[in-house]
Length: 197
Image (tube, rainbow, N blue to C red; front, side):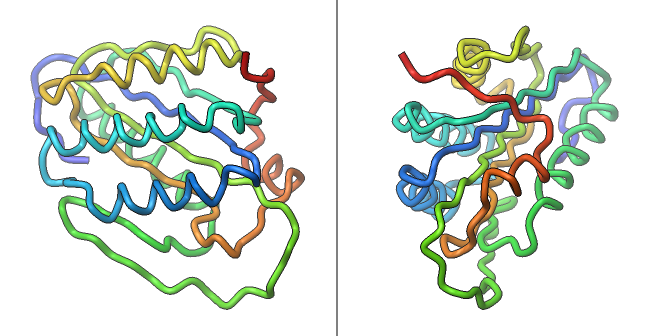
C-alpha cells in the first residue's frame, strides 16, 4: 500500500466471503479475469476492479456460506498502512502458492504445485481489503445484511477516496480442494450465513 495522503485519517475494511463448490469455478474464473486485465496502477482502475469483484460476488450471493468483516476506526495514514499490509499478509499466509497477482500494474503468474486429482467438493474464500480516505461502514453484527451493507458502502467509493485495494481468493488453484473443516481451521473468524432471500 502506498501512503499517498499524509493529512487526515484513513480507514481500512476487510471482508471475507466463503462460497460453495457449485459457484467456485465461475467466481474463480471471473476473479482471475479481473486480476489479469485490471489496472492496478491508478485509483480509477482500482475502483473499477473493486466494483467488478463485488458485482461477481453479488451475482453468486446465493452461494455465500460464511463471512466475516474486520471493523476499524479511522486512523492516521501510517497506522492504516500497517493495518492494510498486515491484513493482506494474513490473507496470503492461508494458502501455499499465489497463482495470480496484479500489483501496481504488474501481472505475475505462477504454476501451482502438482495436486492429486479430486472430485471432493471444495470451498473458496474471497478476501477484500480496502483502505480509503473516508470512514468505511462497519459490520455491526454477524449477519448477511451487515455484510451486504459493507459491500454496498465499498461499491460506492470514489476513486478520490480509494487508497489501496487487495483481492485474495484461496485456494487459488481450481484443483486445490478446501473442505469445510479446513476452512474453519484456516478462517476461525468466519460465521455461517443465513440463506439468501
